[in-house]
Amino acid sequence: MQHLPPPSLSFLCDMELTVEGAHLPGKTPIGNRRVIRVTGGALRGDHLNAEVIPGGDDWITVREDGTIIQDVRILLKTDDDALIMMTYRGIRTGTPEVLKRLDNNEDVDPDEYYFRTSPIFETASPKYDWLNRRVFVSKGIRLPGGVNYSIYTVE
Image (cartoon, rainbow, N blue to C red):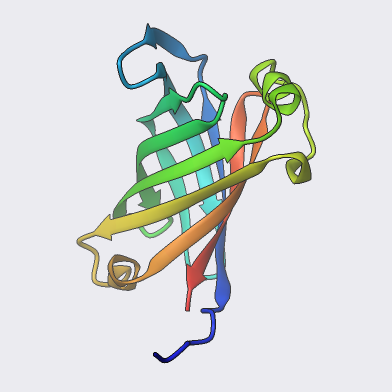
């Protein structure tokens, strides 16, 4: 069996999202649920610059150990007016103490917790069609009132 070298990563963009307070449907058979409305934001990079159109959502499942599973859908409008749909699933986890600080909207060093996502882009724009055909990963940081991600293309 052939062992291949790991893929490399190249920087795509930084993304900042602003969000409103969580809606708390409560504990369901799936887990404790939170729904967070995305109110805006932006992506900035060498090949992708866009604003986040308000109205997307992050449907969160909180596991028994406090680990958060994200399911996010947002709509982007590039600086040249192309529309790009973006979805991502992610995971944020850490020690119970760190997760409690994050839930309390405290400023927590991102090295104290694990926060990664797998973005998928979809667009009809010929200029941005390359986004339809790549795999992406990101590293995130939770901030009071929002989140920031650095998104990378898997080469």
